[in-house]
Amino acid sequence: MIITIARREILDTWRGGQVRLAGAILIGLLLLALAVGLQHQARADAARKTAQAEDTRIWLSQGKLNPHSAAHFGRYIFKPQGALAFVDEGVNPYAGSAVYLEAHVQTPSRARPADDAALLPVFGELTAALVLQLLVPLLIILVAFAGFSGERENGTFRQLLSVGVTRRALVLGKALGLSASLLAILVPVAVIGSAALLVSGHGAIDLLRLALMSVGYLLYFIAFAGITLAVSARAPSSRQALVVLLGFWLLSSLLLPRLAVDAANHLAPVPTVASFRKVLADDVRNGISGHDAEDARLSSVKAALFKQYGVSRIEDLPINFDGIALSEGERYGALVMDRRYGELWQQYQRQALVQRAFALLTPLLAVKPVSMALAGTDLTVQRDFTEQAERYRRQSIQLINDDYTVNGKLDQWTDDAGGPELWAKVPRFQYVEPSMQAALMPTLPDFALLVLWSGAALGLALWAIRRTSVEI
Image 1 (cartoon, one colour):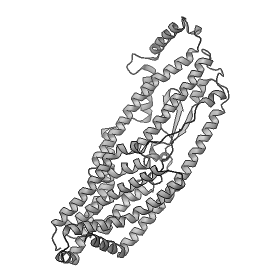
Image 2 (cartoon, rainbow, N blue to C red):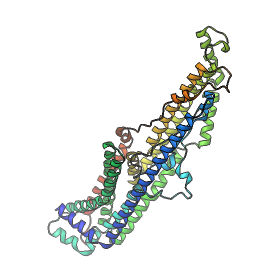
Image 3 (cartoon, rainbow, N blue to C red):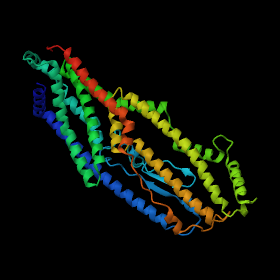
Image 4 (tube, rainbow, N blue to C red):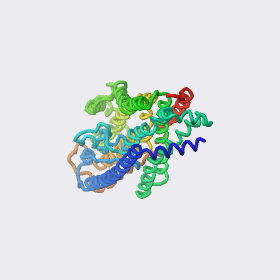
């Protein structure tokens, strides 16, 4: 009986000219968004590879100069977009795609595409994720708002019950039919996404990511379908059901997400880039506690070296003390930056928790982090990239400082102790993306919220149909 009802729902949906037109337009937008996303990702990957190769060329062609000057000259590291960025750009346009590596300081990400936009879009760029998150729920409302109210208005609800169709079978059949129709929207994403991944050389892990993303969106659609059917069952008329559902869409898709962002910024504010850099500079220069300033730290290092080499002056050391001082500055700076950046990331995590609390009010805030995490474009990946870049910066600077300690001369900051042989010793940066487990672990609560939303929505529909009358 449930399957029979589902077939009837699919046929009725297909016969509706307006619904068929809206569905065709939506699928067209989805395919367009995927095509634009693939083209944008291809261009971005090509630009990243070109820029990284040019940065490497410039680094290796510096010629002979002081190693510390080369360390301050710095390098750029460019972030890959993520295998499924063509589906969901996530934080990529806003978090920065490049990190500048320089001695003594860890710099925030820069080169944000959003900064170059002439006019920042209200909803973001047209992406497949935007279509799936905002427009598909509208189609669900258009298709199913008269699911039960229309049956009552046409008099078929009483007829169905009179021939032995149970209310439970009616709800589950309509939900199944609606879900089957929605699969026609997810299929293009899955097919095109899989083909793009295979052509670009990605493996089974990324295909699994795409499959899990499709499951997450299906749960999201089921949640909207259940709510739509519940409202249709309880609304006095189809017109009132449509008004209520459109109000719910506006609230859950536009107003509550904006309110969640504002609440997160208020409850867990983050400093501006300028103020954050000032705090870092003050801590490195003066010491976090005020008792471990640079002079005090270097005095203890000098004493240890004098004892080790049996001398009383830094001029008598068999090594270049400037290199030792630079290494000590890097060591202490790392402690400061780990502390301050740790505090910054904790604030971002608090903001995520605030927004997750709002996901109890709207399923959109549950599906967004799942989609971004599986696309490899969420804040977790951004943090992982910046931390890998920082580890690379410290290793590279330490290699240069060690060479300067051995081959440099005290107080000779203009010498040319470094050369192409030293620059070539610095290894190339290779970013390693987080594993599937590392990407999914932070989003397990969000997946659980999607399951809760879909189950609760279907339960609400079952509860509503039991209490609806057979008449208008």
